[in-house]
Every structure is written in structure tokens, then in C-alpha cells.
Amino acid sequence: MNREGAFIAALQTLATHPAARGLADDAAVLAPLNERLVITHDMIAEGVHYLATDPPEDVAWKLIAVNLSDLAAKGATPLAVLMGYALTGDAAWDARFIGGLRAALVAFDVALIGGDTVALPSNAPRVLGLTAIGRAGEHVPSRAGARVGDALFVTGMIGDAGLGLLAARGEIDAPALRAVYRRPTPQLAAGRALAPIVTAMMDVSDGLLIDVQRLAMASEVMIRIDLDAIPLSADYIHHSGQNRAARLAAATAGDDYQLAFTASLPLPKLPCCVTRIGQVASGKGLVIYDREGTVPLPDTLGWQH
Image (cartoon, one colour):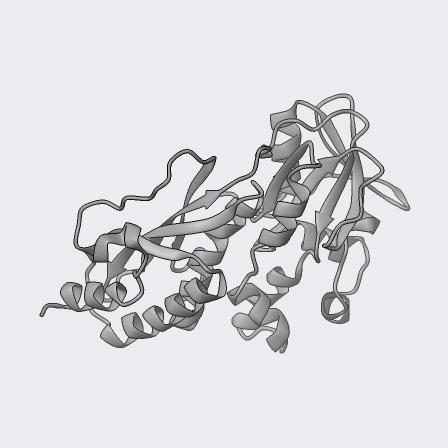
């Protein structure tokens, strides 16, 4: 059996959902189709989205998690995934990846139902892709829909993954933050709870500022962000402080995979932690302020491919 056949055989042990047809067919059959399905596709590349030194198990987890984060922003429950995988001849790395993939599929209760493999030259940077399919409720939020007078909120903490990248590079000693970077948690339960009440919502993947700017552009409004209100963890403050520069660094770092959303007040009681960080105003674009006044927009608002 060649290495592609061996890898697919290993995947077949994970693809037990009937829709996968044992990975012996050219397509998956997912039924019923009389539901509101949400479909997303993301890729991660070695040296861009993860480090070559990151454990294969964590790369597999991240591949699943970043795609499910897109489903979370739609209030969707994951159903199934299809994976595109590049083989580079490193059987040991592939085996560890399979182990991490299995753990992620179990943790998020999602089925692997298909995909494709290609062979790359040995030592070529890996590029991995995943299509995720989810089931949504009646209201599927988009980036558009924010209204003048709405408040802006974010779930969780911002900036931890940015410092986690430094920890993964060995630049700071922060194992907990490194884990946040390597194994993000898609906010699936929060997304389901928020979907019926938000006017607009998206996940924070490339950086809070750049993603909120995208939400403002899609909604054709101005969004004002209170920099002092952005939630920072105790670990972040310990390593970076909480002055203006530290807060701007957190808000532009990316890889948080939290949810930013707009909604009218008051909010109902929610099963998740959210922080109000701004408001929607008339006009267009993004404005940042803190206790000292208006904050000039940084040259870089976040990650741009």
C-alpha cells in the first residue's frame, strides 16, 4: 500500500458517518436536505497560520477549530467536515496528525465525511483545507445588519493568542497562552445562544480591529470601539500590561476566534460571557477611543493575507 493509500485507510477509521460511504466514493451524501445548512471552507498553511515546529496534533485541532469558528458566527451546529490534505512523505507526522484529528472530531462531535489528498515534494510547506457543514436555526446572522444605536460586544478575552504565538516561538515563557494559540476554541455554544438576538455577528480571526472594520463596512455604518473596554486576561496583563500600546497589540493580533456582534440593549440573560466594547453610529468606518480621547488608527489593523 502506498503512502496515500495508507493515509486514506487511517482516515477511514475516523469517517464512520453514513454520509461518508466509507470514503470509498467520489462524494458524500448528507441527508436530509430540508434543513438550513451553513457551509464554510478555510485553509491553513505552514509558516502562515501555524509554525513548522507546532505539534501535528495541534495543527489538526486548529484546522478543525478555525472552520467551526465560522459556523459559530452563524449560530450553527457542526454536522460534518471534508478535508484536503497534502502528503509530504513524513509518515510519522501524518500519524500524529490523524491522532489530533480524531481528538478534535470527538471533542466537537463532528463527522469526517470526505475530502481529497495530494502529494507534495518532501519538506514542502504543508497546506491543509477543510470544508465544514453545519445546521443553523431560523436566523443566520451576517456581517451586515448592524444598526445605528446598537451596542458592540465581544465574547471571551482578546489578545491571548497573539502572545501565544510569541510563546510558541520561544520568545516568552507562557505555556497557557501557547495552548490558546495552538488549540483555539470555536465559540459554538455562544454562537447558538446569540444568533437569535444579534443584528450582525462574525468571528474574530484576523484581529479585533480589522474584523470589526469589516463588519462596519458590510453594514455601512460607523463603529466606535472603546479601547479601555476590550477584555484582557490576567495572563495577558502579566506579560504585556494594559496601557494603550498593549491594548492595541491585543486588538490587532488575531487568532482569537471569539465572536464580535452588535445588538440592541438591553441584552437578555445569556449563558456566555460577553463584554460591551463599543457602539454603532451614523457614518462609515472605524473609530477608536480611550480615556485619553481619540486613538489614531494603527497602520495595521490585523492580519491581511
